[in-house]
Length: 104
Image (cartoon, rainbow, N blue to C red):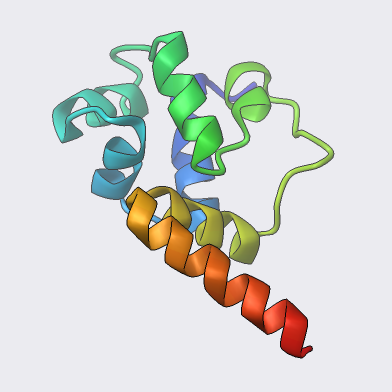
């Protein structure tokens, strides 16, 4: 049976991000994140929520059971990128998507 730390590393790799990006997505420092991947500490609910918002399969992180609705690697990576963008950037991305849909 895999441990949380193993699943966290696996999820990070599935999303195609490095440790510093995973830490940033959760609003934590690199050292704290590293301690999670090493199995020295476990994250709190707020950290798990932020990872969920960044595309991590938190059900899998906690239970080892994959969420049937998990995103593809490409979609998860796109969502993780979007979660790094400020509100102004999100408005711009939304406008681009709306324009693309109208023209398609």
